[in-house]
Image 1 (cartoon, rainbow, N blue to C red):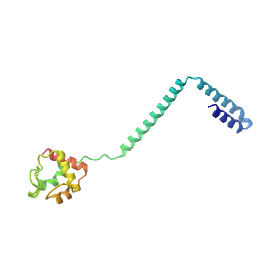
Image 2 (image 1 turned 180 degrees about the vertical axis):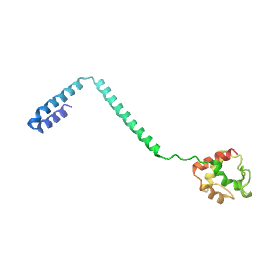
Image 3 (image 1 turned 30 degrees about the vertical axis):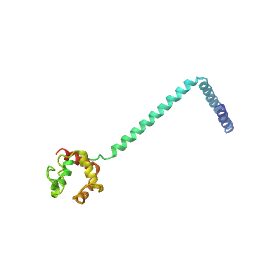
Image 4 (image 1 turned 45 degrees about the vertical axis):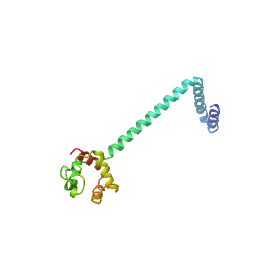
Length: 160
């Protein structure tokens, strides 16, 4: 610390014109006095002061982050929730208005299926890993559905 202070003092003194020397010398003397005062404080006090300053900076950073997040989320349009009943209208032409029919007389009746089973089936149709005789037809239907649509549709069908 003393070395750094000496270098700073030397730079200030060497780089000053005669008229500014007296101002810089008094400013340097004040800085040196402050450094001595801090050095006389117990280490614990200096550590506590430093920790308080760090905490204040961290709090300021967090506050800035929150402001940024609030601004970003404020500008992002809210997504609409998928409507299972509305989505089911495309299904009802084959499965019946209450999911009580075998689609085209070939599929299983889906009324009474739980949400997990419906999600598994729709995702399987979508990726081609599920299905029997109606696999090709259902793959085309399921391909149009997002994950949110599938969840909403499964929720709706499971309650029919």
